[in-house]
Image (cartoon, helix red, strand yellow):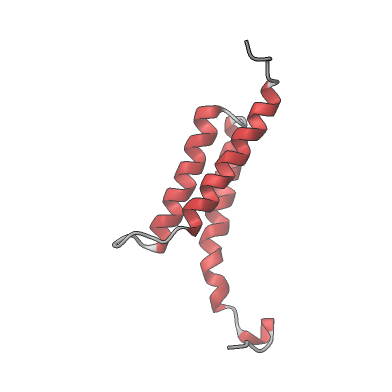
Length: 92
């Protein structure tokens, strides 16, 4: 018999696993025919499914995490369009 594991400890493991899957989905090269936005969407979907199936966090918390991720990842692509004076001169 294995010793009983605290439910809180398992939740942390699943939460870390969900973020690892999200990072992996974002860092892998996109398959042919899949846009960058599509790749981000699939990564967030995989993150959400892990949270929902494992119940690592409550549903309202998962909703807040997912909406925040969608907003952050949507705006991440716009960072490239910030005017140069804001960041200073770019180095090639």
